[in-house]
Amino acid sequence: MNQTTSINPNLLEVNNLKKYFPMKGHRTLKAVDDLSFSIARGETLGLVGESGCGKTTVGRTLIRLYEPTGGKMSFDGVDVFALPEKKMLPVRRQMQMIFQDPYSSLNPRMTVAEIISEPLEVHQIASGKAAEDRVSELLEMVGLSKEHANRFPHEFSGGQRQRIGIARSLAVEPKFIICDEPISALDVSIQAQVINLLEELQEKLGLTYLFIAHDISMVRHTSNRIAVMYLGKLVELASSTELYKNPLHPYTQALLSAVPIADPELEASRQRIVLQGDVPSPVDPPAGCRFRSRCRMALPICAEQDPELKNFGSDHFVSCFAIK
Image 1 (spheres, rainbow, N blue to C red):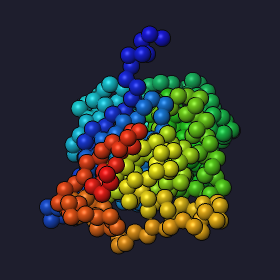
Image 2: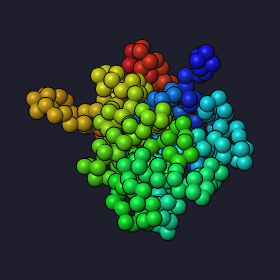
Image 3: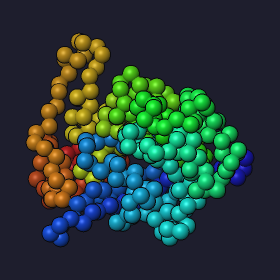
Image 4: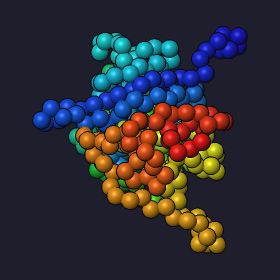
């Protein structure tokens, strides 16, 4: 017990993460630009923002499906970005990903048993009868039957396919799972079931999640803290309760104003904030604050300087010059 007191409470610490993609004509797409955050052990951090803001790129860069352009990422005390590729295998066992589309993320030519047992073989964890038993155990863990093992992905519904994807991610007993919009491709009636399953597995196995979503109302119920992203930058980071009760950044306020409320009187009385214009291109973002071209609170300084993420109390971080 005494040893655990000295362990860093953060499983993951990301500092100044950058991921740029070179484009034609010597231009650069800055998909992720200078992100810093941490995720505590056993915590779920929700990462939200509009499509194209860089959320999925963050997830894929953290596990080095994309090589980072800059920054540092410490995972359980290991500087992951500094590791040579051949030393990444043990780290990859600890970090897994559930992909957005359950239709394209499973190999249609492989049976469910082959899909789930593949990581067991890659990491030399189990083979033969031991692998079969582990596949059966994982299928039951995600609410499927071991009889499903010899079927192919096309024989399953979207929700069942996503459960297979979850089972595959759990096969190597990871500590950290990146959930990349794991329910956005599913029917609404199935979404809650998958969310409940992820929460049950987190409690049972002590997992840590990065939950990526474009629906800010969804992450409210799944996340301890929420990070709001806009055009490659973090604009707000706070506990789920604090963010919903007291959104400070004008972009977060606009996102939350679009979430329906069940109470008709409250819904009728509140003000809907409609953002003007479209999201600028990450190839040619506005100078200074990237949100200023759509912001109702923009100041002259916003065109000149990029605001830093500052703590406004209670670990509520916001990057905005208009907030005092």
